[in-house]
Length: 293
Length: 293
Image 1 (cartoon, rainbow over the protein chains, first blue to last red):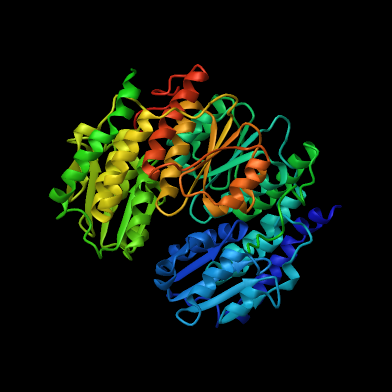
Image 2 (image 1 turned 180 degrees about the vertical axis):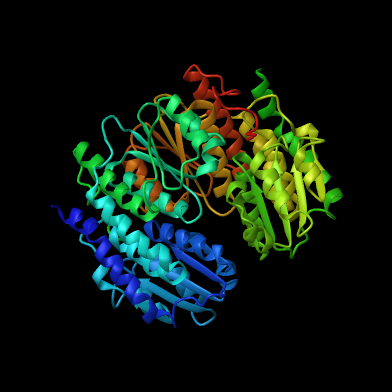
């Protein structure tokens, strides 16, 4: 088993730990009614988007914005700014947080203890146990999501653990001839679809897109071709599914909780990479953290 | 000149008309401080995203959500819901508006007079002159954006008109060997980047993605290859530009206002389609409006 495989396989156990830890952080995590802006880049941003969608479902004003697009105006509109970064060193995220330090409540969530992000935040949740040796993030991202999810959707967080176990035991979808993957989501699974697409892009260099499921019908589906896999992270829309099937497009159905489907997508992305002679854990030219001077 | 070419070429003149019309609609368009939720699908959604970013820049709470993802909770959080649809018949958009009729102020913006959307809205702006014969939207979408833009960024709206004229007179970037296009934006040009990508997808079936410019560095750039064109709708980040150039990735620089760059992208998408033996105005299998029963 490669290091990446081990990291992917550790998710159910670490997610369980996150769900158990969540109550201990309830004083520093966003309170139910708080207006929250989350910032992050790449995988961290996708996890922020998924959590934001779950919070909006409870009626709480919450948005997730790329750190690089978070202006002072966006950040000041919140009661609380939550910044996510695996390393805690991502320049744009550190800068976004520093911009509002002392003006708005700030929280950093990171695996990097003693990191600039934790230093810039009023409060921080530091989780060294979720860190990875792989450049490509898998469990570090999903663990942050599970921690946050447990505070707004405890039943969903618990269900995700068994779904991940199922995903780890099941066969990976066939990679033969795949040169384009489209992940579809709805609600919180749009963020997970973005993360799944990023795994395929990063690990395998196969182009991957993601859409809110019903948006895919409004144009982008015309680019589906025999090498395309359409992967449903939300329940299947039967009409669209049948139209795509008739057109010869391969599809992967949402088979368990969307977070379980993301674990399967991680395994699929790694298999695609290996099939193309690439190292899925360490894409050429991609550093662990983007630090700009 | 094809019908599509004529529609693309009509943009500067129609945009001028939109800028002139805007003051007449100021009583029904969102007032400066209003908290606004915009809904739409496909091109309409991308225009809504671009306008939402411009309004946020002025400090006004504004979000754009896909009509299919607009729950009652999202819509009720606004002072006003603005729905955009070329035909005024798009099922998800009509349903989203009907959901809050009588509970929140609603405005429909459409080219379709006598449409279900206009009927469902408290107020409507009906612009039959922006409608198109092509299935793929070009001017109908950008005209709505220019109308809205004129209310929050008059100077930008005026600049866009001359930028579009420049784009119509300039040479289209080379299409030889292009099989993947990535549009990068920042602020309001992220929405325009999404629209540019949708044009490439719809017209040419070439896979196109879009990202906030700095997000592209956080992973997706590893999938850039010799057939990729990276197209900047925001000012170039010199370091990323140089890295991509060194890796042999072709790039198109932001050369005028982003809306002018979108006009150039429409022409590029049409040229790509023709180069692949496709009809850019009417992609196979794509209806003018998605009406579900």
